[in-house]
Amino acid sequence: MDEVLVVGAGPVGMVNALGLARAGVKVTVLEAEPQIVNSPRAMVYHWSVLEEVNRLGILQDCLALGFSKQDYAYLIFESREQIRFSLDVLEGHTPYPFNMHLGQHKLAEVALAHLQALGDRAQVHWNAEVIDLVQDADGVTVTAETPEGRRDFRADWVVGADGGRSAVRQLAGQDFPGKTWPERFVATNLRYDFEKHGYARANLQVDPVHGAIIAKIDNSNLWRCTYAEDAALPEEGVRDRLPEHYAALLPGHDPWELEMCAPYRMHERAAESFRIGRVLLAGDAAHVCNPTGGLGLTSGLFDSFLLYPVLAAVARGEAREDVLDYYAAERRRTFLEIASPQASENKRLIYSETDPDRRRQDVEKLRRLAEDPDVARERALFTKRLQTPLPDGVSVREA
Image: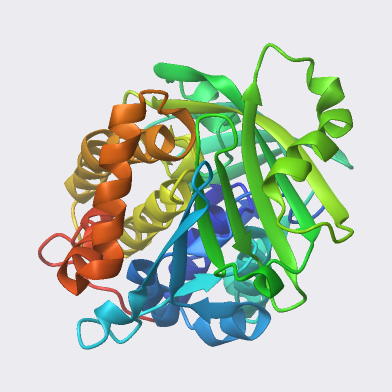
């Protein structure tokens, strides 16, 4: 019987699997898809997660595929004002005073390569769709549909990291209370030379109609442009409406090349508990927030940086199971009290504020980021608040 079964081979699942395996815990990963999924989702890793990414031994490989970035700009659409600030205000406060840009599937692929290098400590099963989960006093049995038919997998513990529609969460009997925003987000990957037009590598365009996040993904000049539209519009017409949006969002009149386009609904939700017996939830399986500001993946990574050390300690018999309750309670509290409210405020600022007086106040506050390094530093330090310290007696160590 394996010690831990991880369901989901996205960045959160692969980080947990790699961390556990490096700690000497035998891990099996189940993924419903035939490979790691490449979709236009998260691609900015805040400076605050990079120390732990480095501890896993994968930061340099990730930076070789993506890039580090300090420059930001708020773009005020109605006035065309550009408000720039930089993460260089963090120099001296962290060894990583920069963010990393890299598609989330690339980070998962790097983690997978490192996991496979650990040999028989870990195995990954693709095309394995979880359809049942049963707990007992000694472990958990997970049933999956595989190319060879139905197969049972047995483990001491299960980590559900299988996304917002998590089968693990549903099979464990957990509701997913919260709300769905009225807008539809449309995330697109395109090739366009924004830098030629004076754009920073991360841009947040403020406007209740033409709000958008425009950020460079990698060194091949691939960019992410995410905008919002009325969810009452037919989803099948998203690509037909795309040129109209780009006419307002893209500077200049150069030709653009679309690589990917993905419409999706935005939610603010959290499972009622992140621990159900021998089942632990992490990342989007545990909580989802709208992506403005990149706090969803950041929260999921901070889940992982706490979960794999405490679960490894329990699996090795070095800690009592109540450290898992600490994980569940603290990560849920951090999401509900800090991450989700800030993501909602970010969305209001970028996409949703219709009151002109409130917008003027917002712009005045944003200007202080460019004028006062202390204000910019305070803003940049926010994401560190999403981290949860390890409980006493638990440390990160390799086998």
